Length: 254
Image 1 (cartoon, rainbow, N blue to C red):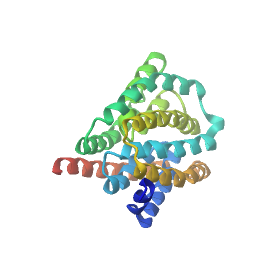
Image 2: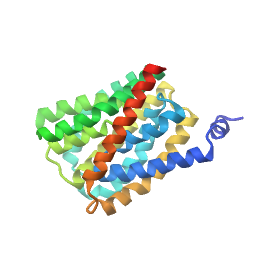
Image 3: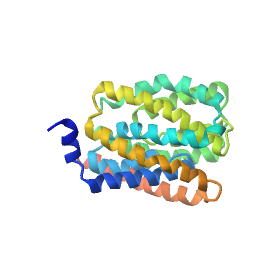
């Protein structure tokens, strides 16, 4: 039996359908709020494949999600901010991705859980303080974010806060976040591939979730002006906190 056949045999159709449905829903959410997909997908994926493959899966599927958001919002991308953030974050993203490949299953589970939990109050704190990021401050913040983004899911919430603090608004935030995230997803995939953590099961789940997520960006664009973001943001925070706590508990229990 080939690697592809063995991987498909280990993934029931109902499980693939669950992953696809979750990817579509979270793509709709992230297309409206600017974040959410990489926060919610680990809650679905960890019970299925464990913690270690989650970041590679999210990175590969993120290429599809962010590419569709770039296509949907391409007219409002802020290219100047995109280049600044990418130049500062790319080297540290490489380092963060490499460090993640050195973690075992328990370490990966603990890291993902803590990242999800910390992300909620961090987003609220950044929004409340209305911090302004310009020039060197934006470069320094981008370098720090790149390190976090390289080895964890859910770092998009920090990038959204950074772009808002840099003065971007509305759909420009969604579009600029998408082009930055898409580029760094590609960088992470290269690192994970070289480290040997992308096997056939990871690839199948990533492709299923990535392809299922593509329509979500266009649904988000159609509803962005009408949907009250604060309602689904509050629900998202609750889900993320609960899921993160469950992962931390599982890491210590295991």
